Length: 232
Length: 343
Picture 1 (cartoon, one colour):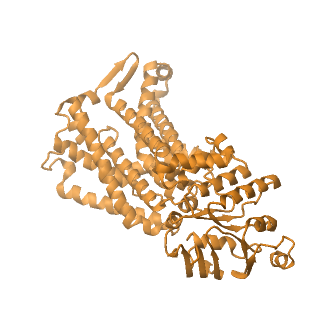
Picture 2 (tube, chains in turn yellow, brown):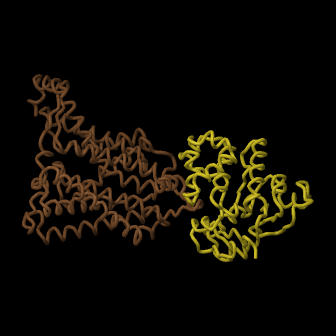
Picture 3 (cartoon, one colour):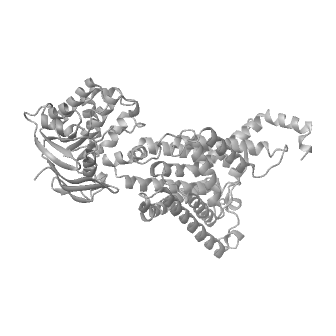
């Protein structure tokens, strides 16, 4: 039994059929990259797992438990963290308040905050600033920290490098690599090099379906076939 | 009146404008009015800010609060139990009304409002409008059946204010050139209490944190494990309870009457304040309440001190503020782009 398992997932936005039967799985401790061009349904896959855009058909199981039909907060409580595109900070809340809102168990608050601050010291320095005033890279750190202290067993990370300067991308990659020691990760990432560095396995998605998959071992960002899948 | 515009009247006006006791009198009246407006409007703001629900039933909750409080003060004989006893009983009634209307709010939210979150706003407006009409007509039936407002009810309803307002609150207090009634002082203290209480709820409690997170990004809040539906219910309860509390306060205020049309009479200034302050902004509502209160008091005073007598000037002033604000700053004083947006 896989840790997170999607089977025949069909999801619609209104009339448009976005996911046309997605099958994939993530095992415990694994980092899995979900690759594909823009608009093929990678973000929708994550939204479907979170039940933000509930699937019309198919099954999504986490640790054996069916998620389809649950509320989003219940999916989060089950131990799935979502680090969405563009980070989605609560911009008018302080850094610390963003973190506090993410910790489900208040008795673990102190130690969770400590953990977040130890992992990303910049957040400690800026803990009483409004999250909206942080730079893009710092916001990404905060988003990852929110996921880490949410007592999650798996993180769904959507385009973490988007809009960040190269040096910051390296930092974010480092942070995710560190995070992968304690949680499983399903990663959507346009930068193929970064995705392959982080991931143990990959799936390639096109038109709402998984069209290829494999181990990342031995595969480089120059791989002909992968590049063909990802070129527009 | 032409006479009023003679040089003598002008001199009188100048005299009034420079009299410290008049100026402070207007200021105090403005703060007291602002406190009442705040209590009326703040629940509306909280509910709109988090849930995007424009609650037309808000005024009906205030009207129910006023009636329940009116019946309670008469039945318990508030006013004849000494100042401390009367005031204490009044405050207990206020808490009970808060709880009763909060429970009513929960019932409405869970059984009716919740069904329509996914639908366009117009559905919610129609629903809350329907609730307010139902609540008003129900109260009208009770009032007419028991003939409450004609003083023939068996608990001796006259006007709850006249019968029960302790003389200490009705009378004037003078400190130096400060001149105010006990009721005004109580209203201002109440207003400050509400501001502090809600500020503490929003900034110092976990639920308040969830509310502020949900106001900004409901979807993200859910994805972090926050049960936003339960937060909605809690906020609707608090908002409804506050509306009821405002009714309790209005019951003793000489400028308001306990009657069925009170539901609409409070709703209009409440909407103006919420719009002037910026939709969904608590800070904006606090500032706008006192702004509207002060301008209202100033206008009422300026036009009712012999220069020109003009009844209902307060209504005119309030809507003039709305018009000016909509032209100059349509988003309100503290409105934020996307405030109350979903997703």
